[in-house]
Image 1 (cartoon, rainbow over the protein chains, first blue to last red):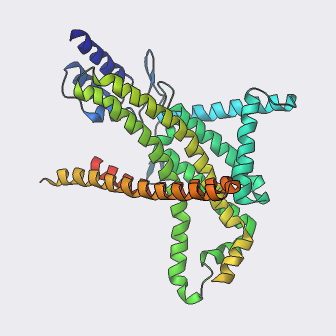
Image 2: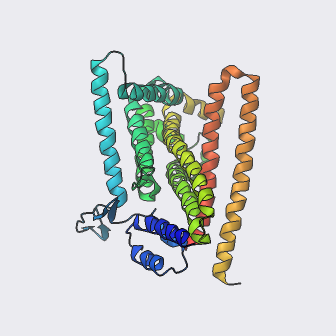
Image 3: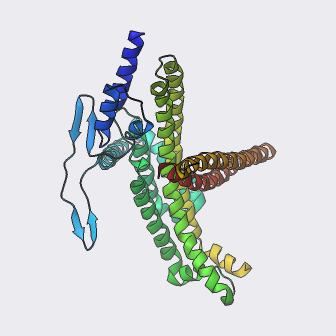
Length: 307
Length: 75
């Protein structure tokens, strides 16, 4: 019984000391005094914080004084999620440049260059070309950048002491904003401003325009909003399930639950690995689909003729 | 019953209802896609692509609902 208590304490400390977040002092006190465990303390691991957890301890990230623009206060200092976002950007840049240089040297790609080539050909043939047509090839670099960036950010949360930047709604909102600008820019570039504005009327009789135009404008914003929410919720969902499963051990205060909950956690981790790839794919798939809607000018003319 | 308790209750019931709806929708979608692939195996790629797109759209609506449930439970 003593051993099991010790194991529980070790688990609890491992779980709690993994994050010295803003809530952490309360969590430590609760753990040391053996008070009733609360789910909120575990939840703190998923949240953004000002410190970076490392195996030996934690590092306080450098902070900068916030900027004041008008009435807004913009805090540009580093946080856990910002750090991991920059780290994944660095990883993507380093690996793609390395792979590109290797592929330039070897005519037959091998190793990491081969891996990149497989993904790039997949994105070109399965995502960009079917959705955007041959004109979509000039947006392929954008799609690939988005794909690798989101993928690496998703995978960062699965390594120990890592954090998923895409589980922060600000990050996904920024990505969706970029996607929104690209969708509108592609539509205007391919069709011209006139066609773009004509498409907003839905091609109906002018008497219904007062209803149609607000609905179409609303439709422009719901697409990137859905992109933002989807990525955020998917990345958070897996972590919440993991925390709930690990939390079962602490909730029941019994070692008997541990094997079951660890086994289920491994299963959920596998699922998260799949979801990380799937969500990166879905994000660029839908972005290219929406870009394709705006880009096919014959589509909008057909739209106008039929209605 | 306290208002807070009602909030938690509604969040739980709402999440369950949303998952029932989304599960039913995606299940129906997958069943139709399987049937279509069985009838026309050479169009499997196209069927899969449109299936993933529709599933993602259903999932998006699901997450809107679930986000409201989380807001109910947290606030």
